[in-house]
Image 1 (cartoon, rainbow, N blue to C red):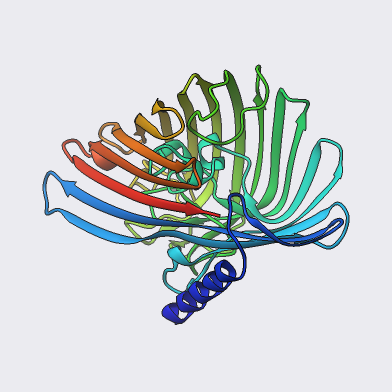
Image 2 (tube, rainbow, N blue to C red; image 1 turned 60 degrees about the vertical axis):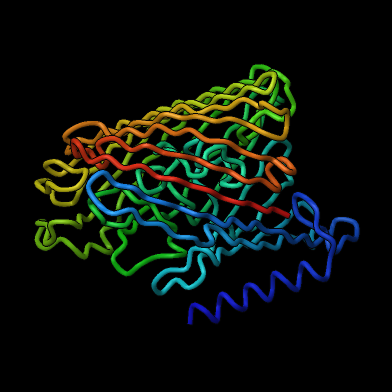
Length: 385
């Protein structure tokens, strides 16, 4: 049962915390030459309030993420990692598998990863949830709206000096056929009706002043910048098409997906406590039934045009930051653009390791429906070790 799995996860995490002293970026509990074992994790406790213009206010307090991990090596140039999320248990998936891979690091400037890893697309998605300025990701990094999630297969990462980094993916990925979204999911945590397929992705990021990592906020004050481009293609293999019969959709709200392509341009800048991240995505998708209309689709296809800009300024360097963001998404079957404006503040006790965040997000024309406005309040406490 779900509660049993959650209790076991809590006991395991508590056991680890009691047995060893904790500090940032994981704890090495064993090391002998090339051999090591490291444990770590993150806990995010979130309060979320939703206040629609035409409806009642609702709220909830929950574990947004509860992710312990173990990473280790017993052979030179090889290591592995597995990570679970007990905060995202749903349906038959009582525990969500996140990172689960083996990695070969024997090449200069390149790594090969085999397993369940983030797909090489969307700077915002590739930036860890623990290193975001806003409590929740914007459209351009949301797997519910076309940014590929983790995928199971081959992944490549590399760099050429301090000014160029790159990545590539050849893997299997699933899509939830909910027509209101283009929702990518890993095959490791799948529902019976998820469309199966293969994804190919590649990206390159140029850093003119030296490498700028996938982390938001400016703690160092150094001038850094990056610009990236990426693309992907997903093709369904036709194995699971629950909502299509003889080429015709059998549901008004579910649509089996045939193929999806995506293109990204992203940029980031850091200097003197100021930071800004900007990204544009174009996601194009086709359904198996080329006449299906519903959700984001019109006559069997849609283009999601997305862009987002978010930034912040350290009012108290390394301790207190004011943040703001604006994002927009348009789809072929929307009446108008769905926009979100966010303002907030972050209190950093120990950079991203221990922080409290507040974001107030204002939705206009939600899901492309004119006048469907909604305000949201997020308050989140995070502990990472």
